[in-house]
Length: 128
Image (cartoon, rainbow, N blue to C red; front, side):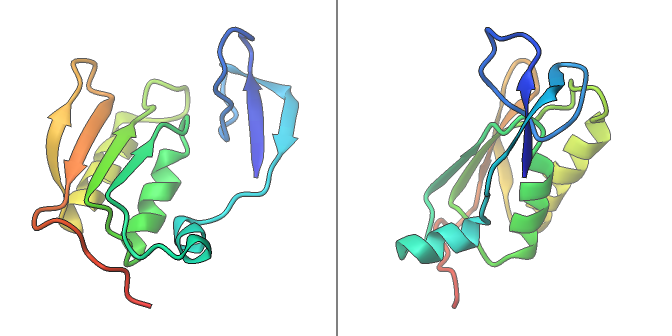
């Protein structure tokens, strides 16, 4: 997957999205894996807390997560609808997707970009 360095070198977060805050001339290719693949590799059947602050990549991960059988007890996510090319609608769609598979919002930051989701009833086991 391609990751772009931030234009401001005091910032540390790379992004998979090409937008005004990244330097497209400074791209890096890294191998990535799906959450299910990492869980199988490590022998994990459950996840208590999944934290995502992945600079715009959260939308694809949430979509993939909702299509899978993986259901962490809590999901903490920072949405990046303040990035150029990402809309609030995309964040609302991701929130609805999580709600449609059983998650409930338990926290929203004052800036309305960080959300906490809880799966009522607690942990679910990943079926193999």
